[in-house]
Amino acid sequence: MSITPLSLPRPPQRAPEFGRDALIVCENLVRIYQTGSIEVQALQGLDLAVESGEMVAVVGASGSGKSTLLSILAGIDAPTAGRARVDRWNLLAMSRADRVRYRRHTVGFVRQQTAANLVPYLTAREMVDLPMTAARTPARTRRARTAELLDTLGVAGCADRRPAQLSGGEQMRVAIAVGLANEPHVLLADEPTGELDTATSAQVFGALRDVNRRLGVTVVIVTHDPEVSGQVERTVAIRDGRTSSEVLRRTATGADGDTHVIAEEYAVMDRAGRVQVPRDYREALDLTRRVRLALEPDHITIHSDLGGDT
Ligand SMILES: Nc1ncnc2c1ncn2[C@@H]1O[C@H](COP(=O)(O)OP(=O)(O)OP(=O)(O)O)[C@@H](O)[C@H]1O
Image (cartoon, rainbow, N blue to C red; front, side, top):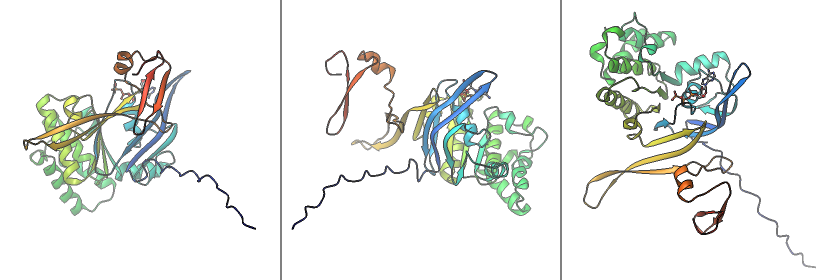
């Protein structure tokens, strides 16, 4: 008697874990602030993956959740739900001691208000030394690292000055050196050029780029400054507490031998498959509440429910 083998459907292949190899991963991240009876959903299911060595700008309207995201990544604020991992740290399950270790060694954080990053009565050299003293780094290593960082940031000449004796740009560069003192893998900067004029902003941005390229530190910058967001390889836009679009930039050499920067904008699809259609596309084609999707061999089309191809 011959037995016909059963033809079973193939078991579904598991999708690879989102951001498995990334240095920073946020998945479905939620942060709800409760003030009295009022609840504000600052982050509403945000997905983000940043690879080691990247320099990424985060942009978005005021109130979209950028600072909340950065505070969570800095270990200052804790998420309400979702997943957030930086390096080996699960940001939703850190003890108080873990949090201190994480903030001391894994991330450096630079605040927008330049003065808030600095101690008024300490010199630049003393300020860079301070986090290393807290981490019990030997004096000889501290001295060498302080000199190296102030030099890398272009403020070696300011080592013996206090914040009031430094310009806004110098203060910010010293703040970046302080943030890097304990050799973190990640530097987070909240509007680092927000209070500076155009020329000084360019210097501070150049310093951040050096930190990324020369020291290999992964840099995440929240910014409103198009000069900054236009110069990084990846800009992530946040809208209403979720990542909505990304711009990727690459340099290409044309037939004439000239190099150009090519910027391509992508919509971000969340883990549930949701994509936000930009408002100008919706308005141009009169897309309303309901649309028809059609799967083509290598793309998907969206049709208005009024009929006709869109
Ligand atoms: N500690 C807090 N308590 C209550 N609500 C807060 C708190 N921090 C932020 N929010 C609210 O969460 C939302 C997101 O704020 P967040 O500061 O992250 O936005 P942002 O994109 O950084 O804005 P901006 O560009 O103006 O700095 C806002 O509605 C804000 O009012």
